[in-house]
Amino acid sequence: MASTDLTLMQLSPIEDIIGDLTACQLFAIFEELAADGGALDSIPRHERIRRLIRVVRAFETEYLDVFGRLVTETAAHLSWSETMVRYVIKDFFSLLSETSLHTFLDSEIGPETAEQTFVSHPKRGAQSMLVPPEVVLHILSASVPTTAIEAMILSIAAGVPCVIRTSAHERASARFFLNVLRMEAPELARHIAVVTWPHDNPAFATRIAEARPTVVFHGSDTSIQRFYQSLPTFTRVHPFGHRISFGLISPGAALTQETIRLLAEDIARDVTLFEGRGCMSMQTLFVMPHAAQKDLALRIQDALIEHGFPTLREAFPRTPAPDDIAAAQMQQIGVAEFEGTVRQSPDGNALVWKTAALRSSPGWRHLHICSVPDFETLMDAISPHRHALSTAGVYLDTRRAHSTAKLLAQAGVRRICPIGRMQRPLILSAHDGQPRIRPWFQICDLEG
Image (cartoon, rainbow, N blue to C red; front, side, top):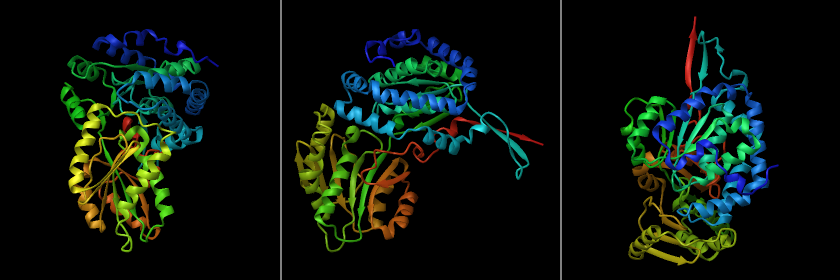
């Protein structure tokens, strides 16, 4: 087993030029990965997955502490505690196994026996084959360190070489994992490159269009639109813009104080992880109280401040919010003092509003809460954000769970889960309501 010393950050010749990468060098990387793709094809899917999981387990046991320190020290814009970085990565890895990856790929692109071959469909009178791209380019934002690692694992498991374009603000996690991969499974690592370049340089868009990779773009709607406009010719782009998530409590009965305390713990976890910067972070909590408990929103607010947030104080120390986020919090608090009830503490903020709306939080343990008398009011509150809805974390009357889930799905929600699980999506789940890797592949039909 390789030791966790500074050799982890020794760079390959490709990564030696990462700081001054030119558009021509990026094109050369695409050509090199595409030309070498046959070597990845020659490794059977089950063997690729077995080796990837071996790397993941080695990372967990040998490299996790070093990784936590590195990301904390180099990704200053995140301002996460080291313990949170370690938890997020370890939790993500806990969802990965050989079985889960096999099941995921079978559901998305078919069984291993059908990989890169024509499969008969007698009822259609034709055969079809899923044709993978030569290279997939992942353009990532800097808000969540696991995104780059997940992109590498899914790409290689699917047998597709990949280029990871990281943000200049947080490229340590991708480079670190790639170097672990080089030490543990160099035959897989050779099919990955980690790079970065300025967003505002049109030469890179030109070279990307010439290389014709499949592009998976994670970022704001504005950055995605800007990228589309920069491309001189058609390029296959699968965009994932920023999303907003919320919680819903609709118990159908009055809740005991103990139940409220336990709910506060789960709510606090959904608000705290990723410091509220992920698309699946709870921004607003809607409370649909029972007739005998009209003050449920205020009770939850008290439980969050007095119990929920403090329970995470040791596990996830709250670091000072960046200046822009602190200013946004204070602005919202100032308004809420006139339009609701505000409670602040060193562990987090909870703002109960008199009017129902899906409000965006700047993060750093800052939650909006509002009561809604019925589902019609809830639909009115979330419908303006239909195009951007991601996850609904719910605590429901079990008798109405299915009908409520159907209403939320029809309103545009892409994922529904229990409160406390919002930040832990299954590796097998869809992404923003879409298959994760199936869209990378082209279908070719063979008729007659």
